[in-house]
Length: 368
Image: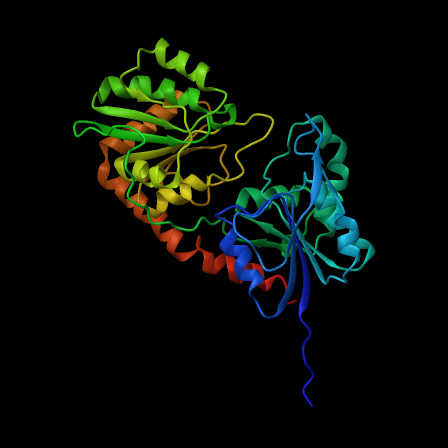
């Protein structure tokens, strides 16, 4: 008589389930081999079969120090074979890891971090974070920077699994009003990012001020909103770019996002290092899917993976507006080469950075 295989019991702990993650979570949720419970800090964008939104409190000025209530007792109520949790900085990760140690579960860290976070609280928890990296059954790494960081924290190379950071491609709908008024005689460079310091808009504005002197029909679209708006507006005024830079300072809805990308020749992510770094930059995935020329700074997670300099896009040293200016002009002056790079980035999307690959790699973690 054949022995019936029991389902693998999995506790999947995460801070949230946003729209770009829901297809991944849903795929795991529907796998007949898994008995999976999702423990989240926020309500998911769409329901899952079995999920629990944890009550929690956020400690101000403590860099995502969110204390969950009831997670420990919920984990203890079931004998889990695997515990999956998110970044090293979250209390939910510490709780999940401790449970796995005490109850002999296999702990899987899905970590987006590729550099130490410069925050006093993270200095205090770094020793414990190193233990997590050393003792994790598997560590999921988005790219080579993320692997290098995990290794520096004591992880074993054979326990690190490269998983693509994926954003599902959404086909845009017809919209009644565009984010800006597009004009036939203008060409557009797009930066789609919240107006916060880490996104590095200042170097982009300074670089564009020089680019537009050589290419007067180009315009810069800074799409998004945030606390840096007034400072960036002052910089636009200083360089007399009021009629050259579009910066509405409002949220971009998905339909507007894809229209902005389709109308733009170049998509730029000029992020800089602050006390933290750009973990990845999913807007780059979306731009690559649309075969756009991509320019990123050295302080983005995608650099070296999706965007390799002079292979699948252009890379400049963070905060270096002169180098950024040169990369923009290179991309404009050599459209054939830029198209080649865009096609290379698009091929990466098709071959690796897609949901099928991510789903298979995640499922493989639970079959060893």
